Image (cartoon, rainbow, N blue to C red):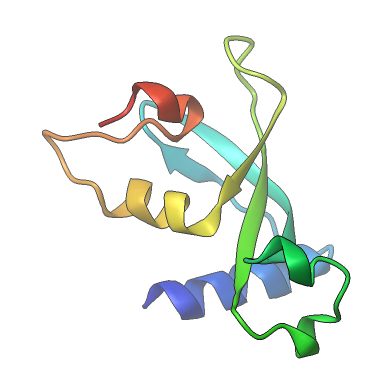
Amino acid sequence: MDETKALSILEDSLRGDTAAFIYHCYNHYCCPVGFEVTPSRPTEAYKLLSEIVEGEEHWIIIAEPSKCYPTFHVKRWSEIVKDLNTRYPEYYNICLLYTSD
C-alpha cells in the first residue's frame, strides 16, 4: 500500500467511530485520534480546500499514552511516513524530531 492510499484510509476511518489505530513509532506506541488538512502556503489559509493551488499539508493528531511526552502530538503525515519507512539500525523518533537525524 502506498502512502497516499494509507492516508486516505486513515482519514476516512478517523471521520467515523468504528475504527481505531495503534501507531508503533520509535520505541513505543501511540494512537492517531484526528487529523487536519491545511494549505501549504499561508496566503491560502482562508480558501476552501477545493481552491488551494499550491497543495495541502496533512497533519495527524496523535494521542500519547506515555507520561514522558505531551498528551497530544500534531505531526505532518510526511513525518509519519518517514518514521514508518525507517529501518533498523537507523531510527527516527517522531516524538522528539529535534533529536532525530
